[in-house]
Length: 363
Image (tube, rainbow, N blue to C red; front, side, top):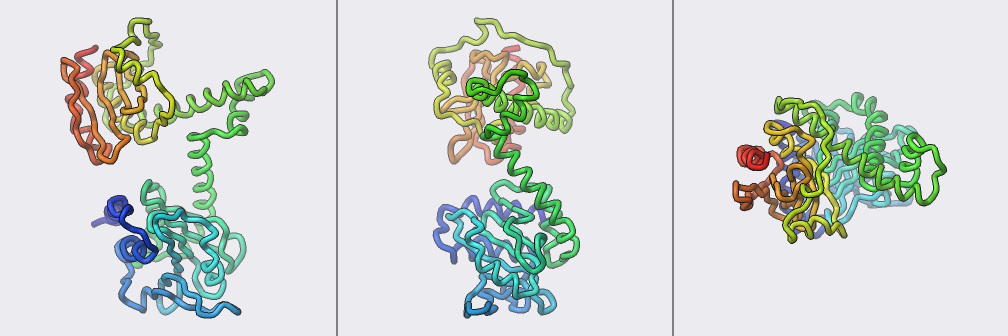
């Protein structure tokens, strides 16, 4: 398999087995050793390449062990410290990595729980491990832009100079992206104030803060939707209809009582990025039949609805993603829903014809 395919296969294994992995040893055997062997390409059973429980006495600290040391030409290049997968990765877990980093030739240190891998080097001070990672690989949400950098650490193309040279940029870009992700999900006061003061001339009072917190959150989600939709339309070669303002009349947004009640009750509902990505795929498919502004979504407690003209009586599809087995719901001419089990978002494309037929029935 290609490098990316191996990475995706390991990520799939992690998702399938994480619930039965309860200890650090199990984490190392099931997740970390396969990462070292299948992703980085080192022979975990060859002590000339991988040394488990590596010992390098540090001052008064005698007999301490680091979980793995990866060697090249007899020199330690990468140190790996592991924690069990049920625990989040925290810098507090890296005390041994700090000490070992200073007394070996290693320039790369890795802290992992088998799911998240944090890569450190010594950008801030020579031979002293940085407090923040320059690269964070999350197998639950792989950032494709990091794959070329990760590949530089593999046995076949090990390129330490290149990765050290790019580590500074990777470190700060990664931190900025994580901050942006946090702000898009749960905007802080400073973030809200930043945008408010650029569009609102009045004082930033408590009432204004509360009002614009909701507006900034809504604008951020709409911006992400539009960016994803533009990419999908380009990939699919869908027609780019001009945007025309559409104001739904009062009778258009009424619906059957049960559906209306479910969609209207927003308490405890959190729209996920996966649901928004699924919506954009449905929207990209449906836009071959109608203009994109007519295709909207409403989140409910039990499903995520995609509807036409903001009208609950015009269902296009439903995303049932808040469960272990995910389903795509499609509708026939009588508005009967059929649920199709899906494993990945791409599976939605297999039901493109049913989605288009639902749009035609309401258009």
